[in-house]
Image (tube, rainbow, N blue to C red):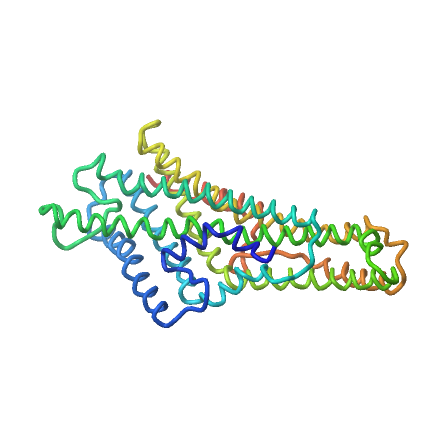
Amino acid sequence: MSSLVQESLHINLRVLELLWLYTPGDQTNFQKVRSCILFFVIMFHVPVLGGLHFIFGKNNNPTKLADNAFAVTAMWCYAVKLWPLIGNRSKINDCINYLDKPIVALRENQKVILQTCSKICRRNSSIFLFYMTIAVIGFVTKPFLFEERGFPVDVWFPISLTDRLDVYWGFYIYVAIGVAYPVIASGVLDPLIPSLLCLATGHLKVLNDNLKHLDEYSNEANGSKDNNLYKNIQKCIKHHTEILNFVEFHQNCFSYMVFSQFVSSSLVLCFTCWNVSILQPFSFEWFQSLGYFLILLVQLYFYCYYGTNLSEECDKITTSVYMGKWYKYDVKSRKALILLMERSKKPTIVSAGKILDLSVETFTTILRRSYSLLALLKNQN
């Protein structure tokens, strides 16, 4: 299981590597400069020019206004969220590969637990990348199919770019890349961050399995049972410490990235719902906006669901100890287990920006706030 993370996240890491947002090994100075130049050239022209369009452009169509508000808000969110992949890449690489360390020896049934988590990660990444790719294709081709020389996002420019076809198509491709690049990058980053929590949850399940069957597993080794039992408890404590260290490391690396996603999601969900409410039902634009809305919900739910799973699995440690044959253990082993149980009483909660917990309750809170903002906009309208 030495390549558990690479096996689970190879789709995500490969796509990020192709986008120059991830380097498997140490990053050279040339790679840093190259990534920074690409990031600023591709990431900022759409949100900046789109924002200028709100100031200097004509915004008479409420549908296009909602479309542009959604796109510009999302682009700024992606810029904030993706920048740490360049500015803090070495630390993030260490976090991604943390669980590949030989933390604990695994039994066959425990390998199955982690392999199941790995399959879940690959499934989530594949599904999410597929739908984000479909969303990009729909967003990029919509002006070409349904509008006369428009752009994927309405942007402001001091001169007309639609008079000459070569200029128009050149800038169209540039805007399309500016939309596709951050969306695809976010499409692999969003399942990657909660997938690491899923793998950590798998390690917690392995830990709980070892605690439940301490007596049986200690009988399998040669030597004194009490000595074997105490050594196994020490391994469990070390395993628990490594998991907690990883969770803290994960939070330090990704907390503010997730927070930027959560803050912007309330606005983006609001704009998308507003668009769905004013569009003609069952039209192409209506289905497109509905698809964006569902993708956003899944995007947020990934974070909250796996954050909740991790917390719940941590809470089971005391129960796992109690379910074992602790009454047969020697005093030294019981005292060690008491220390582990006391330590596990502290809730293990992953947060976004140290403000919002990654939990199902937070997910429902975001939905309520988005609905409140939507109601306010519709009343103003």
